[in-house]
Image 1 (cartoon, rainbow, N blue to C red):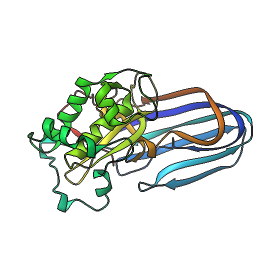
Image 2: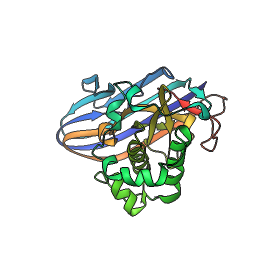
Image 3: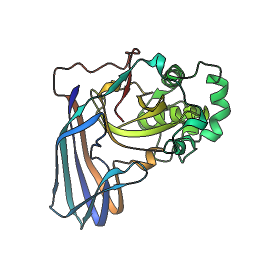
Length: 279
């Protein structure tokens, strides 16, 4: 069991009346329990909290007049992951998949699995089905993509990334998700905090449905899988931006952190002997 201290500081110059939707609140699940959290804003206004979407992701809504706005969020989360031998994790036949999983086989805005299906089959179709095939997709993505900040934007799709062979964490996740879905493996995008992430930021990774639950993968290999803290999930990054707004505001400063707060070792991403699930 690991405990992770996490948090972020955000500062905006609000230029006109603006409504923010923040998706930075850590989720709770069977393998992830909030010990405590603090959410502070300046200037002080009412904060509406609710859940949204298929996965009931947490949202904080803030309505502001022109001002310099700061947000501070931090807390501690306990990770009690289900650890499983990868060799035992098989792909479920389509006819046996739970109805809640089926939407994560469909193409989405940034994960064009319908367009990449032939490529996925040619590269990975002959491989042994199960955890090892998803890992092979992650290995291929890591090998063939270069992590380069500033080379993609909020409109870049998995097909774009496959062509240009570079991107950031969300691009690695989008491509791996698309290739999984192209092989009829349910896969979904996850946003979160990540222990030892360099450079520190909100992180994008993914889960694949194997056996009877969701398992974590990070094709970018930027952080240990057992140190990933879930904020929210969806078909792709469009479902879980850390902030969206209607109005006019400029992000002036962003600081994000996540560190292990006890002595329990965090598994390294190179550890291939254990599959990790916190869903």
